[in-house]
Image (tube, rainbow, N blue to C red):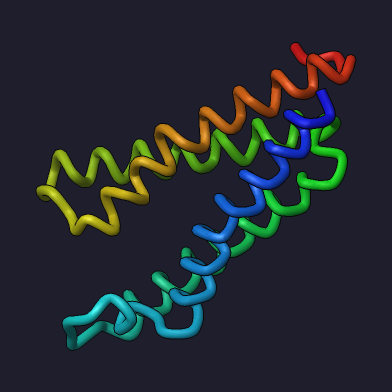
Length: 133
């Protein structure tokens, strides 16, 4: 049990690098960090705001690492937020076309990796004797 718990903690730490670094990059460089241009100031402001939310999501996932087996509610909530964002990205793909490989990789994190990590967290919580509904 302890080995699986530690493995989950390590994987969440590494996976959390994606939203933390991606969010930080977006906050610092704005829409210009994606290349192209020129950019509308309001669009850039919104992009930086959403990047800040992404950074916050990553930091909150990291906050679950200590005592990860007891953080099921927060883990589920964060997973729901990420999946909702992924479904929105998927809708955008359908409406406007296929984005870059980086955005497709993000879609994979949002709709595959994060839900799998949530299921793993629930398994670890159940094995630790935490009541998970």
